[in-house]
Length: 209
Image (tube, rainbow, N blue to C red; front, side, top):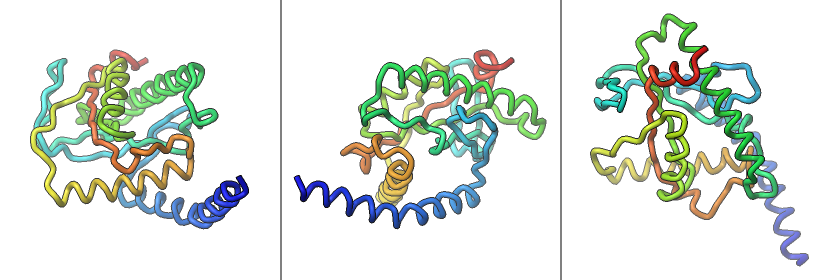
């Protein structure tokens, strides 16, 4: 028992040293990737990044996004993600997340509508890389309630891409540990990459004012 307590104290000390470094790295990457805040609401779960689409795709509502066109890529705003109570999600927690998602997407619809320089954006992308393949698929099904859809991956990852993804998973694990340690699971380092897409047309229909 004493050994366990000592181990936890050592882990907390170690993480207290790392925390400022993790925060600095997070800020650096957001500046480098131009990840910006589109809402001042504390209930907004996302920041956005404008990216260039690398592969043509067609969404269910007929929205065609060609290679070279811009997309909004959503990034979790880690500081705004509610902490999981006692390490286990509850029904109340799930309802709070749903409210936050409603706010986040409503704010995004307003942001896009109020910026003429974003008139070319046809779709929004989200990354359900929150765990192993099965858990990511479950989250993708939840995202479908908000109009997001999953597209089949057209080509397998190369060895270099697989290694790069593992490095990303390490970074994401540290960021999650910094803000929401209860969300860490055994499969975190092996999280899958499940991309979901929402057409701007659907966003405006569901969440526009």
